[in-house]
Image 1 (spheres, each protein chain N blue to C red):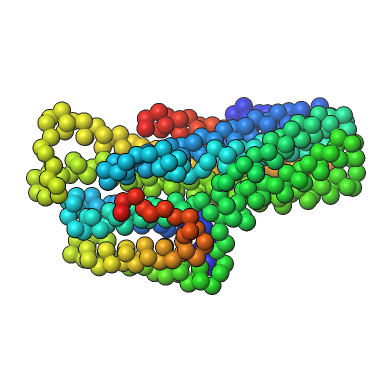
Image 2 (image 1 turned 45 degrees about the vertical axis):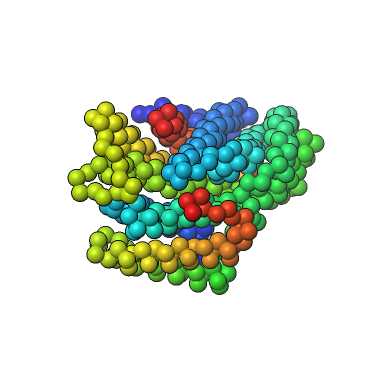
Length: 317
Length: 119
């Protein structure tokens, strides 16, 4: 049996035996939620970085193919997502994590003391996010991450300040509910960014794959390329073949990537957190919460494996 | 049901794949190769621009244009692998690129466009 399953069973069993959820019961889920979120954020960072690298490489290939000058401006314009826009997305994911941690802390019966620490941490992340938003000229439009992150930061800020002032009451419950839809929209927009950047990576990969075979194909017996391509020496031929093989390996890597892995589980875990925070907090509610977090952890473990593949792909490029 | 922003971006990606696959059958520098190569560059360029803007997809014009795009894509599929129908394939791909250009204008990113570097 997997370690993860054993942890889940232990947590569920201890909850059921005791019949109540003690303050200590929340320590483990908070840590696990935090760990899984970190993995998802790291995956997003790796995907964004790789998307930019591929776009820049494609631009260099295209300029070189057309014997055009390679300028810094061309290279800078080629990136799909600016460092500022990337910062907004990573800060937003960070705020989502801290928001989730605070919800968990608020559910504990010693919430007032515990929540203050987590609310302070959430506030710090909100400040970083709010600082990043105006500097970003990234993806524009009303449904962009930039446009959604601001309202979410405001709602999360309200939640944090209520928690800091120990207002564990109806107002706090309302703040939690209000932030729920905003969380969904934000995760959706980041997920869509990832999916679209992946599409761009795929297109760059297709073109790069074609470039790799073009000159070689001009060497074949019946080819009539313009201008004619000089015959390869055996060394050049072997080099061209190696490049084609490497390009095909990169293509395989692109096809096994999972750009949005972990986000659906993060969304579900967050939903369960909101549900639990506003519930009557029966043991059954807690079991469901733990289950959602465990699913998130399992997905995050798969994402961690995918990050390894992405890094390997990056090293090969 | 209108197609989503991601579906549009993926549809363009699919056609980029088809063009480049076809290009490997042709000789570099020949007229058909040059035309298809330029059309591929244009699509890559437009796809990139559409990724940078989070636009709305519900307008009547958008739906009309994306429906036309899907129809043209189906036509491309019927001839892309037939070497005797290269001219027809190129016409359909050019039509596809023209429609993408109209979409790019419609969603308001055309003013931001730089000319594709391949031209």
